[in-house]
Image (cartoon, rainbow, N blue to C red; front, side):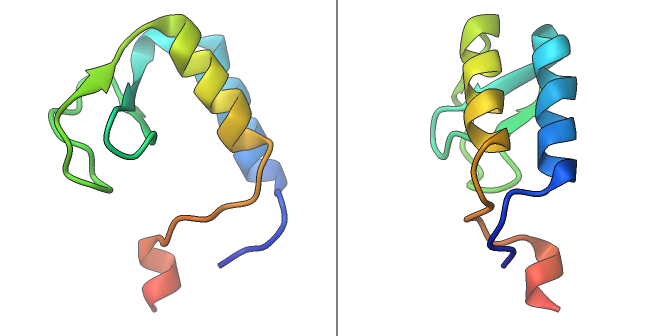
Length: 76
């Protein structure tokens, strides 16, 4: 796992914050997913918060901290 905040996390957070209506926050694991997602790819949850303010707040939070979730790249 990466231990420092990297530029790609910050750029993705800016992208999400600039268009929050295209995303939603998983209520199971707090991941941000595309608005068209039916289930969360991380926790398989199906309840989401679509409030743009919540999406922006979560993007800022996730973009400013180091990665803590395990991704498919970590499993290789």
